[in-house]
Image (cartoon, rainbow, N blue to C red; front, side):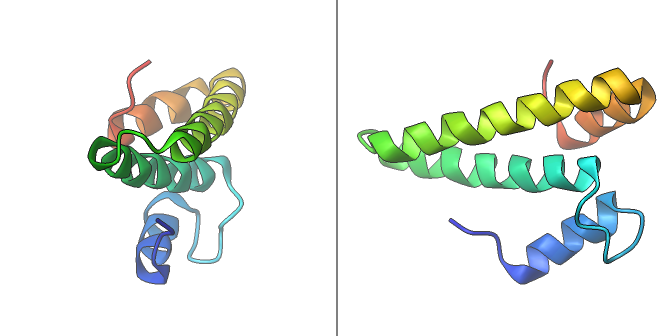
Length: 89
């Protein structure tokens, strides 16, 4: 379920200001989105995985909080990010 180093590096490079920028809001949201997508695929195959479902809800809540913060602070970056990640709001 964990993201590979290559995938993380690719997301950091795409959404970060440089390749070492792992803490910016955009990168954190992109990493959480990848984890959410992977966990969603897992849960489609394993419908009775209650602890996995709870983990998914936790990740979605974290992402929602970060998206709300980004929306308050930088509306243009928020709109750009949700269109790139194909997140509906």
